[in-house]
Amino acid sequence: MRFDFFTLGGSQFWEDIFFYQKWRIQRHFESKKCRLLDSWDIQRHCGTFDECLKAFYKYIEVYELPRQKGHMIVMIHGLFDSKNIFKPLWRAALANKFSAAAVNYPSSQKSLEAHVTQFETFLNNLIDITDVSFVTKGVGALILRELLNRKNAEWFKKLKIQRVVEIAPPNQGSKFFAKLSQYKLANLIFGPMLKEATPKKVAYMPDIENSIETGIICCGNPFVDAISFLPDGYKNKLYSENEAFAEGCKDIIKIKNRHFNPIKNQLIVKQTMYFIKNGCFKK
Image: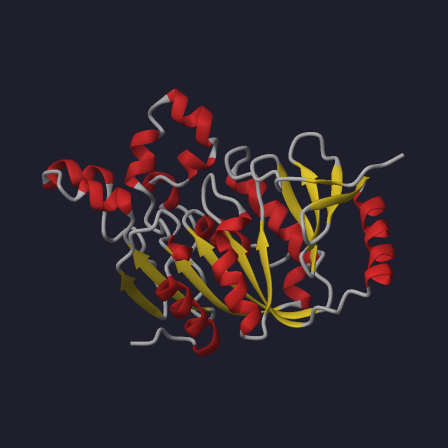
């Protein structure tokens, strides 16, 4: 006998590889076991990917799920975050008639290369979607840069890339992460991505092509406010106002923010949606 049960999404252990109308198939980053979660994060099946997909199609008939279609906004969170940080933006996307998928990946467990491979699988498995835009937070921007550089991936042939919005991206690398990466405990906690987001590593990453309209939102947070009182010499070793800048971005805007999760800032949500729809920020 099988019992359905609630899960917590498994933000640091499970990776999304399939999504349809908030139903998702997740794969454990280590065991490769898969599970099917419904829109309430209740596990409905477990086994191989094909077994979970087969179970999903049965549930489609039972629950008469409406088809997702058209333009989807794919949301990529930052280090040690989860898909749940995007709830305000996800609601705004649906209100504006977009399909939306906040993708979970085990950010503290795997390397940048492994995360990119997961997102390739996720996009390859998208059904009934023709266009995609991306919204990233933090190191999610670095994953997207590598992802968009793999032009031989299957999903490039079936999906048209529209626009990109990067929220607080470390496009020049994070000085704070570089400092943290010197400590073994920090590397143990935050995983391989900590070193991958340092200025030394990011310097070798490809930029997003100019043909893809990209907007950057620079926003502070309580950490930036806290170190603002330090002498410039110490402050400059931990943070640079230019960390978010990237060559070829179409528009860039600065927004005051006091939330650790910038997606809770309604102005950031509104500006993100404005750029996705118009290709520029509202001045």
